[in-house]
Image 1: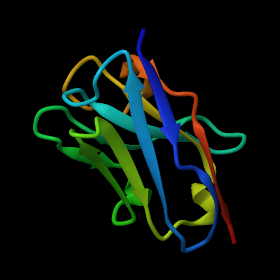
Image 2 (image 1 turned 30 degrees about the horizontal axis):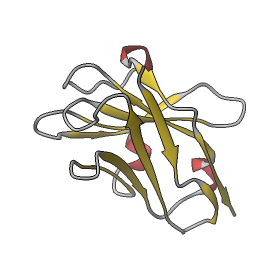
Image 3 (image 1 turned 180 degrees about the vertical axis):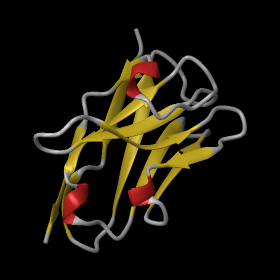
Length: 124
């Protein structure tokens, strides 16, 4: 049984920063693709960022490029999402997800394991 756990969400003012963490029990995140998704209030879940296994190639939603950074710490077996210059429209529940493959994907349906989510609220 693989369980993903997100942490690091909270309330922040516009322009501020937060760092989300994703860890796993029952498996390692060290060599698989991991993605971050978010679900804004009243909207569908959407892709935010992903990191591939192996080469750790990264991919981003256009609206977060230059502000968010996804990274992997293999020693800590943790995937991070550093979020800078946050905007009110970034308000959402953020989920991490992992694939049983090394190739990252932007569509949620391609991910095998999901966390419960962590709330990020950005005030104006």
